[in-house]
Image 1: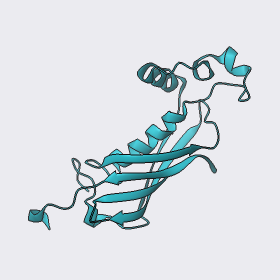
Image 2: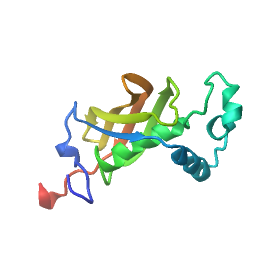
Image 3: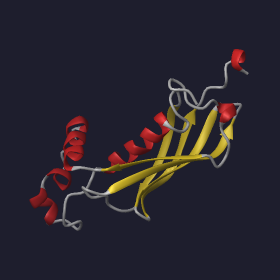
Image 4: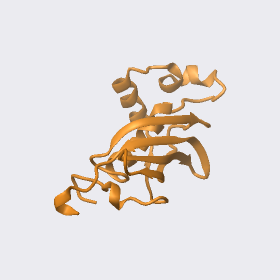
Length: 146
């Protein structure tokens, strides 16, 4: 893998995996709300959040999905990969102060279509908080480098 280009299709193997972990701060939640426009009070209003089933503010679900994007765009498949599809199921809340870890694992490689299908999971400790599957378009190695 290079700084400006991640893995080429030929470099990938089923079972390869990469992760990224982040402890999510209150500032992260407010910045994400500002960027996304999602000011749902369950994320930004402690008094409101106390009245919900969660009993305190929760991190945006799509913040977890953004951590998956971090892995895909910086580690595996890495820079140059194009996010084509994502199915995701949110299974548990993430709270401010939690350390969420996103992991991308190669499940299938379709060389003809230049597609890589990956398992995507976000965990907090041993608990899976989001799980799914993503498809990425990945470049084949240029003929000059083959």
